[in-house]
Length: 95
Length: 95
DNA sequence: TTAATATTTAGCTTATTATCTAAATATAAG
DNA sequence: CTTATATTTAGATAATAAGCTAAATATTAA
Image (cartoon, rainbow over all chains, first blue to last red):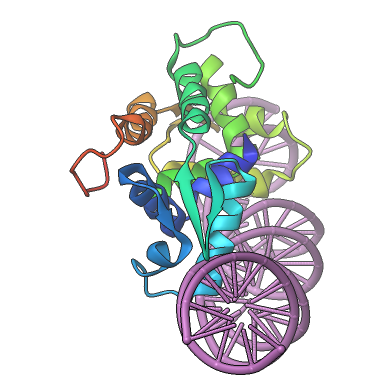
């Protein structure tokens, strides 16, 4: 869960996720949306991948990235746990 | 929205929010839950306050902190926007 | 096999952030 | 008014993270 929140804390990475929500994209296509060097975008993609927020798959010369919605849903579950009735007894991190 | 995600990216701050979900607490009571100095906790509280994730109110010598669930709900809205039907036409940041 | 294209890895620099101790401020009590 | 308690502010340091350029890797095409 910490990797997820760390990954989501950067605005560039959140924008990448929004692009991937629309459709799958190659690393280069993603980089074209930013004024940031390709190696830096690659680094952001790696952080998203480690957090399992995206998946990648090689297709010829390109590597196609896609969003992993199930991890997004997990993160949303954390918020649901927080918003649940104030004063609930559980002291665990909601999953 | 960026302040919110930045604030949530630190595990100590997330734990503070979970404590405040159970009940309102003074700055000192919060600090007692961590092996971190009071000034550091005060700094974390300030970041949560700037993100409007918590509110504070003086009560005598103490300052009582409470969680602001409406901002949590806003953040959850971001996830709802992301999870919504893949390929939706809006290119704006969901609120 | 050589050249072109797409992406990542390595190594570095700079900015941000988490933490600390010491000092300042604010309230309450003697 | 002086002391005790609660919290924050200031200033410093060390770790983390974002960005860059240059070089390496992998695939496709000539």
